[in-house]
Image (cartoon, rainbow, N blue to C red; front, side):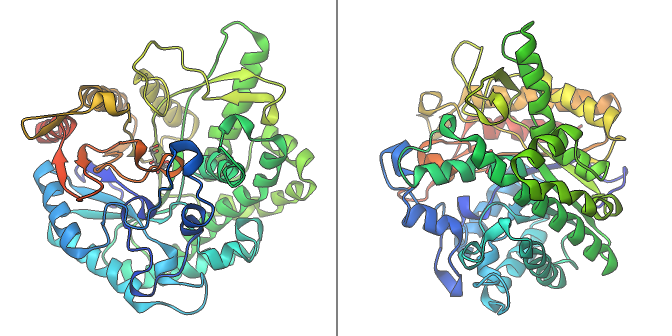
Length: 464
Ligand code: GCO
């Protein structure tokens, strides 16, 4: 996988530890924030009507289970698999004592993937932080940068000889500015995204900086250690469109939303600084944030090897005085039904997004590290041993087509990963939102291929 153009296009699938592994207390694992959110704070209950947790999830920690899952990956024709590590398995207290069983598990999983001809792409952080570190201030503390670097170094020493591709962080904006604020609200009731306050956003600027800084420092550490593979980040990118075309306040809101949602991290990665609007808006809300400029040289010196693009939908943006930074995003969907959970189905914006990255950021190597859709149960019905999910099948093939069109136009696109191979635990929505191209019966763990699996298999077989 490591960055050169002769390598074959990587067809993959993506997942995250908390969403699939289960085994929340196995082999010396420590508690993570998500174990606490779901078991203690019951954050899925207001939205789904039931307490749902990742305690069992889709049983992917279990070796017999994952070996048969790997068979399905082979049948699909995948070249690689993107997954994340649970930090709390490796360092149960977040720092200090290493839990050998946790590290061994991931090392064996990497071997099992390689044995099956699948390239592992390892995400170091996909939202589950050791609770012991949350208790010490979590990402608000500048110490988090050091905690993360130490954890990353332990992983590197064990896995870097076999893993050619690492992702430091997954989707900074979504976790810090949507999910975490929703969790906070859900502890007292329904985790309504519309209830997120300006003050909550104001508190998240420093954590965002700590993610960017930890990522840059870690990239530097990998290089200093002689790592030969590639290290990148996976960003949630969404073209921001004014909700009411021609309304100047919506046009301005969409511009600011673009700075916060897209350019903040893109500029950090490829320009070594943050957009002026971000500096101005967040320094006003948190005077400490103004000082982060002192760290920009560290960002600039550690440019990532690639960009991971997580694309689901563009975001329509409206000026809204009651919303954080006076803009509301993602609440409006102009399309007729059916609509995907993550927004309107508009593959043409994936092509535009990739072209923009090519033109504004020096055409870096790009992987689509997530793309997929959940349409609700009405899109899924069993028929003769298969689950028919025509909307997802159509979504995936049209997005791949758009991505390959951008590639034909010179975008340095190296691969595509579907979100997700299996139905799994969808954060605040628990198991009520299916995204898999393979259906999972959450009671029995039985896997059943969907129509979208066949569609993706045919696309892979045809090649680029
Ligand atoms: C991510 C995503 C995944 C979700 C997917 C579907 O940020 O990487 O949130 O974890 O399951 O986006 O909503």
